[in-house]
Amino acid sequence: MLAIYFEDKGNYDRLAKKIAKSIKQFHELGINATMEQREGNELRFLLTDETDQSDDPYYSFLAALLTEDVIETKEHLLLNQFAYNEYNLVEEEQKQVISIAQAMLNEDREDVVSKRLASSRCTALYTAFLYQLKAQDSLFYEPFLTFRMKAYTEIVMDCLELAVDEYWLEQEHQTTLDVIRQTVGQQKTKRRVIYLVHDETFRFYDDAFRELTKDECHFYMAERTGDHTVAGKMEYLILALIEMSPEYIYLFTKQPDHHTILLIQSIYQERLKVYPFERYATTSK
Image (cartoon, rainbow, N blue to C red):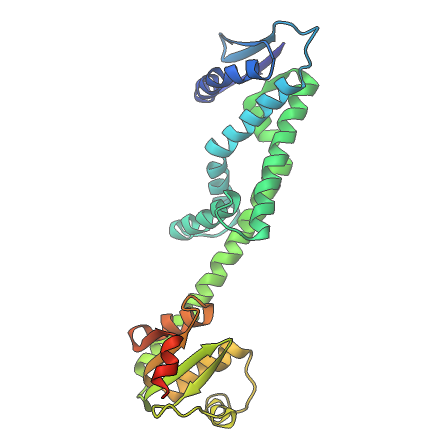
């Protein structure tokens, strides 16, 4: 026999309904199990033929169901609690950080870290439930959530920390973009148009469609930075454009969603015109 005890009637009613709805799957696994709802918010499970059947699938099934329920009904509360207690975030910041963390944990993102976190938190929670069910044949639900989920809660906290870091990096990035956008909007234009051709690298052309040499580009960079040293290719490109100060930028590319092009677009907005790379051949003639 296995018993689960609840202090909160909401938890009791919710899980009783879920387990009752899923009890048929016990039979599909060859387990003759029944569930009784008893007074005092107790769920009792009985194996009707314990001598002939292994109870491992029985425990595994319940552990998986309890894991899924915690993730569905408790995880967002845990994230809110940690975000409120551990980080000095205002309400809107807290909402955005939790949204990032949930995207990681729900595998809405394709990066390796998110997938590892999502998998690890499920494994940690399932293992904790399974160990308790097998070791004690009883589970005191609310105390278990408070005291027996250390590995799971640590993973959730790690995820929240990553989400906070990502949020502040994004805020810094957005602040930098706003400053650049303001600078571009206030400066006087020096050229009517600059053509950019993107084919693995970016090449500059003036309004007569003459390619600008590296020395010419370095000249603009020297005016902006005082020397020829910049952090990287993307910074070089953006700073060169800012110093050339064109009224319009016509860009030819096979990759309109390239991250550098999206950055230029966010700065110059309607002043940037993006065309298919094939148009470059006809325009340059």
